[in-house]
Image (cartoon, rainbow, N blue to C red):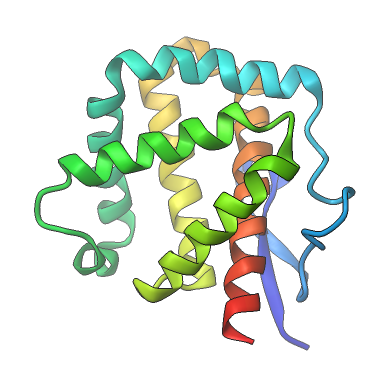
Length: 175
């Protein structure tokens, strides 16, 4: 049976990989349920912490890409030489998702479109784990003591929603 990976708060808190296996097929994007797993407190923690990243968004994006290419140098060729504009796109996408965490139905079409574009760039399911690891690492470095275990778990849930939705949409495109 084929498997896909899922970003998981348990695996990070236990010190393992951020992703763990779940059955292929992923969540249904058409109905609430698997995607509606964040609490209102987690959503507020993500928003609160993202607001603290925004003043340093260019530096945060640079740190993110430095980390991503450190842990996955094979991905460097998928990106332009000058990452300034790419960093702006990253922060805009994060802002879009963070702003819509309490109304997932309204952001899913945009997330699906983003996933379809990423397939055209060569993004594969396994890349989402690497991006998640780089994102959580960047937030930890950028927020310092403000990146509490609760904030970490909230971000892991948020990224998990994003990654699951994007992987599912990419698979729909490929089918």
